[in-house]
Length: 96
View 1 (cartoon, helix red, strand yellow):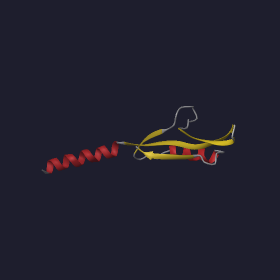
View 2: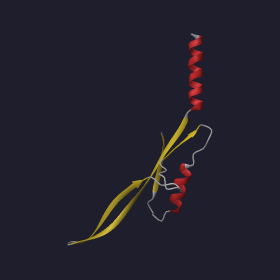
View 3: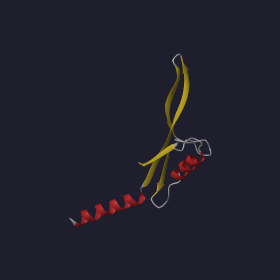
View 4: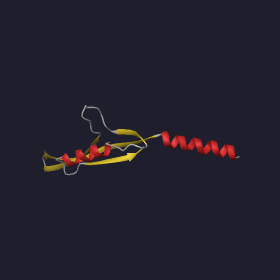
């Protein structure tokens, strides 16, 4: 029994220490346009979403790192939010 417990704990330890952790981010914002209709003006609201591109033009929607490193993707999306001229630009990052 102790051999089984030792092997199980060892496997769990090595799995946890060597695994990567990943984070996925995306952004959303709402775009409102005014449309002329026979009855007057109407507002049309469209919610847009997507992922940002990094400096090289590649999609930067997910980042996987080793346990002892830190994520850069959240800082990247936060900087994009700070630079955005949109009032309702928001992003969401989730662990995967």
